[in-house]
Length: 384
Image (cartoon, rainbow, N blue to C red; front, side, top):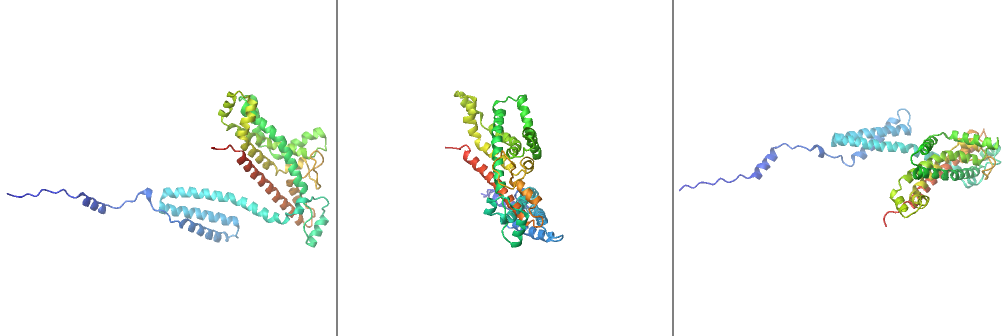
């Protein structure tokens, strides 16, 4: 009797392992290596050093240094990413670094303006500057202050009050007109000829030069009041021509985003349209409306040309917008730079101009902060 061996099945694990060992190792293109964390900061440091070196070739300047450093960083970081992580991630890194660079380049002028105004405006900012006017300040006074090394005499109180009063009256004129126009366009118009004409003229007024608004107000009141028509209220009318389109557009957009379901629910309860607008629509959109109005005020508070044409330039304190000339901060700055109080010693006038510029920037910044605060306070509450 012969014994035959039963063939045993071969082990597949061993053969599979041997084949895996013999097969060449391939790398997934989507799972390539990754740059170490120190690579990008090291590239940025190298770009800063090389940028500083290159910018000294033709005379060092901050602008050339920033441009050289940004270009070197984008090229170096993109090249390193493409070599290590692949072409796809290299293109993505190029787009990302270009966005970062554009953001930084946009911040450079803003930071430069803020730094310059603070550097030159803070020395002239004082309580005396905020509480006194230029009435009685002559070239001899400036010459004496320079010779004795004393503080600069004269301030911008009259210009500050003129700015506040003229802007206040411009807001009083513009906000009701702009809001009522926007309410008509959104709530009452049916897309007819009148609404299309209003929309067209609002678009035209949005791009109108400020000097044209000033000439219009001066000519209009010149016909009514005669040659002595330069006063604060005329300047307020000129500024309102510039404010109304902004108020109309911002209010119109805010009213459009109010859900129609709120209006329909109010109508279903038998509430009339005007009361629905007053009690439902406007309170819902009040945060955006207030923000738009505040930004419109910030837009016109720094206008110079229409104020020069309509309100003139004054050195004394005038709190009556319906009589006599008035000065504002922009015209005060313009006058101090163009015609210094002392032609032989212009430093006091330049100091007053920079201090007034800093004060104007602080006012605009405060208005923007107020706009954000109002928008956050009156924003519709979410959740319970």
